[in-house]
Length: 235
Image (cartoon, rainbow, N blue to C red; front, top):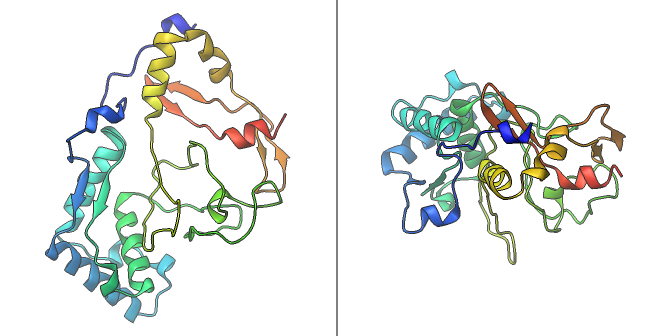
């Protein structure tokens, strides 16, 4: 079976070296972009809406929305990521920043719950808890997180206050990893395609009732879901 698997040839199968000296993946907000975000956020907050109650039609971005749609195209059908810079966080309250982040997300897709608690918006900071001690997700700890995929099509992170130490984020192309396996170690693919039982610690420690593939191919599109902790904890 593995000798029939194709290589991924689109822009998603990148290497870090591909972007040396290339900042095409960085978008810097203009003064007009920031003003549109500020006006939209304030209008929604003045209406006493909870941030997660804001709808796309409430959050008007006449010009920036066109750029955001291009971001979505790049994320879904291009390299798969981008970095947005330039929001002067010292100018805005935390609620305003939250509203802006949520509003941008509404133009990228449909919000889904972050965890088994049903939270639609999560803060990333060390709460003094540890993974493996109950319903604890890694973003609530100070522990090192291995490369993993989140359970959604698009994930966004906004840094408001950098960590005193650590806190660095890295990304890797899962389709590039797939290509490297196909090229150099095709014998590794079959177990990854067959998948593994998962133990979902956060949701009470239940075992998955079926094997979850690490790599899947559907209509010629390669996708990846890897959560090493939940696989290893299921042994």
